[in-house]
Length: 271
Image (tube, rainbow, N blue to C red):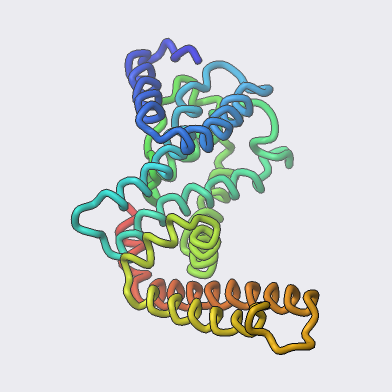
């Protein structure tokens, strides 16, 4: 990308920082994020206008900050707490709510707000406003050259802010966001278990119980007369049961943490 003429040096510096971050990442992680960065750039170029460099940089920075969070937590000499971990992830939850709100909002003509032109400028304008008025994001301020192009009508902006406030304060949605995240990312799950011994004990107990059940379907110890198909089906059922137990352990832990610390989490991530 060519950096914007307005405040060119700052944008060029941001691009260099992104390249340095990618250069410092292990190759598997670079491969993981490279496709997403390409999609971000292509989406911004599709039917958009003027200069969208800074908005694209913000989206890429947000994705790289998410990837860097794992490295930060894994390399800390003094481990953080589960609460601090959740506070950091709440910023990314705020970002996900922003995307959801923008994707489901119509403009004053009743048309999708960011389904056509100026979508990056709209996102930039809205995020800058919310970052000043409502809450923190992983990457906060977006330099804009054409912010007037992204300014929704007053009644649309008011609706966006109201829906956004409701979204980021929804404890159940945040709990589900965390549950899905930890179940999908083994490294995050392992970090969380290291940070909280109670969760680690719960998961270890469920794992142990599942292993005991699995012994019933071990071909070397199974009761004679049990077919191979029955052994395979039984082992598969135990694996599903184990996953369900781990999910329930995680959900219970997250629900407890959020109920106990919600006030702290919201204060730490608001303005």
